[in-house]
Length: 154
Image (cartoon, rainbow, N blue to C red; front, side):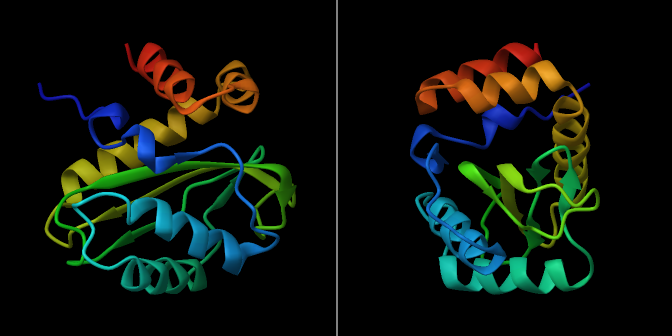
């Protein structure tokens, strides 16, 4: 069975440990720019618009200080993931009302539903683990973030 791994779709240049955003709109803009570092993303502004549209359906702030903004658009050539950390936390209208500090954002082509859903499920499962979240919060550089994710994925 082919297992979709988060680390197959994220690179060091798509990880920020110091997001400057002060609100949800700024966070989506900054995260879109991170995704735009990949050559698999045609236009970060279109990705940002798609993320904003997705948020209108309901917040992707899933609780415990984590949000998983995601969008499907043909402006993504393949599934692409970025990670951002907002050290002060920000109001992302999360389901539990907590500020969000950890963001896994991804964009996927419209045709790529299976991998998209597998990755969404994998991230959702990993972030339930408080130890995993704490490691991400205390990491000091992008390589450490990749190592943490990789070690949890097995």
